[in-house]
Image (cartoon, rainbow, N blue to C red):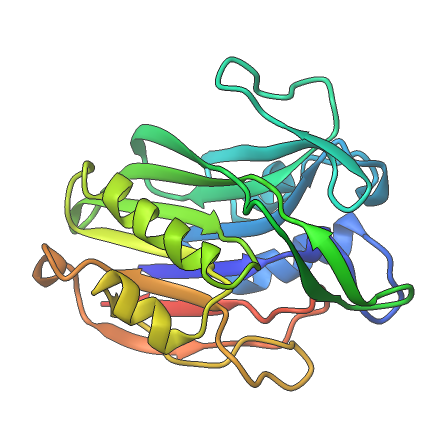
Length: 259
């Protein structure tokens, strides 16, 4: 079973700054993942051709199970509003995360995380980028309980805040939410935290220790695949880890093979 997480940068290439659906499809297909967590995902955004990027990625993997979870309605860095619990943002441009599975899904669960109360500096890649002082966005956790050849498995995708300290607070909330779901449990995503703090804050086992950011010459691991030690014995061991180059994004995908 292959697990992967990939911060898409809404499908944009740093080479030409464009979002090409064919290029995104090829980049995702190359991962050949059975379970794929996606971050910085657009749905119906003009900057990404009004495509549903989660659906494009699922089609690339020939995966029957997929879901997009919007964190905000609108365009990050321009104008957006948080989602309410009775509001899924349909009919409006949205931005969030996705989770894709080739295995059947028993149940889905969404947990919403509030934004940090302060602005924080962040580096934005590409033309017009640089160091920007941004207000944080709401975040979301998308979890699924899968039927796999190894038995039930809880997998979850998230993209945590870039604000130091607040992302640690969010990560603790994520772990509490996931422990209500069946073991074994695996968290995939861009946690905006290095490997050491991510492990210490959760007590979960990293299934891969590889730098993933920036994509051109990775120096730090922001993207993680963590496993709750409770029930981990029911899963096969890690047999391979990879962070291949991609034609899109400022992050490298992180891939873990089990079995």
